[in-house]
Image 1 (spheres, rainbow, N blue to C red):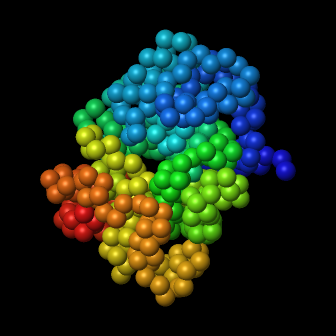
Image 2 (image 1 turned 60 degrees about the horizontal axis):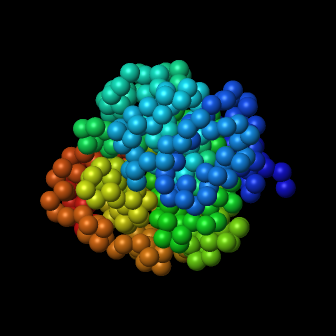
Image 3 (image 1 turned 135 degrees about the vertical axis):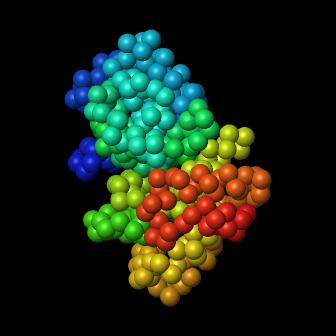
Length: 377
């Protein structure tokens, strides 16, 4: 079967073997001196070598020092390589962190810093222009959907983890090859898969009106329901890996509609430098608490979600997610991840200001977030 070309918000090459499309992507975008942005784990797994073999142009430089949660400091370091080696485009290889870091690096290449100028909550959307080098995204996990997302979530120099949001931050092309996820360990498969599942749920529940996004989110949930546990239990299950990569992509295509309180809190917690908390794992842990909080504000939507997940429509959705987390080996609480009472007040204030808070189906203020965080502890 030929690799599918999907044009929706950006251009996506999707299927097993899609990595072979990388050479044509570079050529079509006029990239002759690419900077590769990745992390050490992805490079050690040999995935950068596989991408380079497919590129058919020499790599100008490789930045492999992407942190677990991308930072403004790391974006500046990548920018030094970009400028010092005369690069004209970026190939991001990895999960959401390298892809978001590549977007931030591309932004800084043509826009004067600091990055706080471009944060959505600081009115930065209007300051981002189309003048930036092209980014090609090659995801190696099935979770964030950053390869088709218009945002980069970055820890700024002032310690806040904020979203840079603009239609100009979409990668120019995404190369989605499920083959690259076959070696992903079970724990990371589960955590990134729960990220995709949370994106689909939060988008479907978001208070904006966007029926096409709702339909995409429900399809993504159906794929998660049939394939997340299979991919975690047997990483070589090609059908499950295909469906999870598509579910991740669909979650991000859909969350142009908006997200909600889970992401407001996970962004805030993800900025805690001393803990370096994984975003997908945070989403998994926080999701049941937020589902209970939102339950009286979502109308008919929980039964639709349950049906998409293959569950009885009268089941307790929060409990269903808790049981799924347990089967996947996710932590049972924030405290199990090292979060303490000491960070709650600060985190709650940041969550209330996060750009995803505005589309939660039930209004939430800092006091609500304090209560939700304590419940999740």
